[in-house]
Length: 310
Image (cartoon, rainbow, N blue to C red; front, top):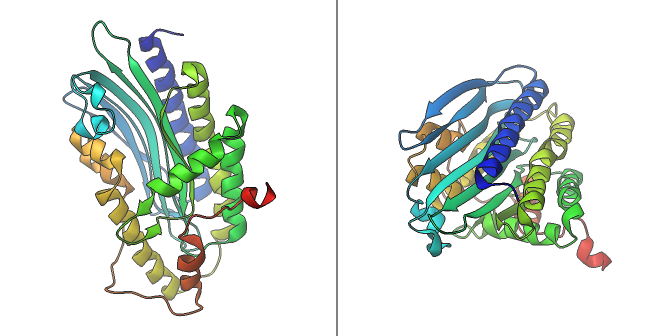
């Protein structure tokens, strides 16, 4: 097993290259705008590269962030479910992205891959990987959701047949708005605290998830970006974007960690949609496309039919 400083350097090199690749591929897919980089330093240690594309042909706003923060004391959000790590110094690095398309038929999406290492003199370092990706459609197409989940399954299947069902369930459970009684979208993969495979294989699984995002998402964009829509669909998209805001501000551990660790606020809140609305006591019309989202897609589903087949 490589020394932990070598491990950190390996992960950082992968993450920075991943950010470069994602920005290039997403800008190419947009065809109308480029990412603008904002490099920042964290006074307590570390920094990052925030890259944001706004006003594109496909993306109203797209953000792809790389950050590496370190310090002498783990933030409370990181030790809440790992109290034994309190008092250790830490390094945390990751890439996260959130894409808010213009067209309501193109789903919003989020992806993240990250690495933590916590150290204390005289003790073995504690490290783990986390990550995943999830899809938030407004007017879903079942074939798109199946493609998304099949790509997710293909990414993690080489590591064992148990990973997709476990990480899919974790995603469904994590991206759940308890106060609304609905999932944020149609899920995908979510994992945290991964170290059971050893460093090399755990790192390989994290890389596989990071590299699966583009083949999972861009085919959906290509199919849906030119579909005609009206003000009705746009208003529903803006209303549903409110759920994204609610989740990120009420439940998201990454947002909380970023704010508690003194990260850069603009970068942490980059995930927020540029336009959004709330409507008091909204109810979709019966038998409408909007109602279908609630009835079929905002509940965990066995999208690949695995359970029926077994």
